[in-house]
Length: 429
Ligand code: S3P
Image 1 (tube, helix red, strand yellow):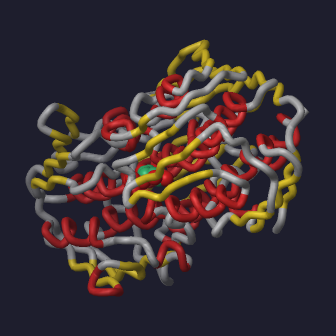
Image 2: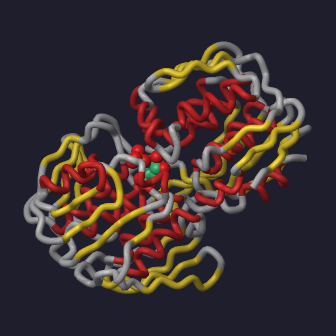
């Protein structure tokens, strides 16, 4: 599907971003292995989270939707999952595949996990190797590094593992395995990644402690308590509007009910470092997560350096930030973000290549990019590379560019933000 976006005269209004993708996956998976019923409101209905719901259904978990975005999960208890009769398809979703791999490695049955062409090209050695060290029997394509994964589940033992790169998917997969293992599992990361799994598991009564020496996971001795929750709005979805409003000369956008967990709010820090005018209002908590309304105004922007521990706090927002950086004065340098090369697309290459079509001056680095801002953008045809975040970042670029921008593969937005194109029409006034 092609979508044509014209330069926006003004950006005004209020947008309620969809439920957080990471939290929605976890709300479904963790409540599935709790004992009893949980109600999850504002569950994200993008294709990735629906893949998780489908896989859990195939494993014997009853999940029903009773009003739009509200799910009732009938938790089967820690030993209640059943062998699926067919291959489990995670589609485009790395979170589905990696978290379920950790969980299924500990179940007393056989599972096969696969995904679409993008997911089948993404690295899995990062979960396969530590799970094998815990005693898991897992085989995978390309010498154990790519899906499909065949898992002969069984007994595991705890390990101490230092993740080579900060990754919440890896940390969560090993945490799930650790809950079923014999002995303690200790996980250390080079920089903190998103901590939704830890927060939710603690609220459900799991024996896990997050501290200085890393995350310590002890074996479950009883069942997890079901957790009713309202999923906060996705800051990674809100980021597109934040990036657009900050860079547009006539903008004021209010984003309501957005999750502002410090492990995810790096986008606010990075945009503020560029001079963006951002107010965080009405701070409150929904269950175990902080939430706020975010108001962004037109701002005079300058380049900045985005690196180090900030990277995992905004890893999914870098395509949107790159667009904003094109409109900022001076140079923006993004480094320590080599992980972007193994996301749904090679996001360093794809972002640089597509924004160059719109006149951006971007130089690729092995682990990031240098964006020479100030030259403005001009509309042109460009493509999403089948990557949802790129499709939406290019739409934002289209709002900020002179003339008309046509985004090929625009339907990819449905992976994490099914209402994106509707919200775009609403913001563009
Ligand atoms: C996610 C973690 C991040 C992020 C992805 C979702 C999660 O990936 O990029 O979109 O839900 O845990 P990594 O853990 O691979 O960094």
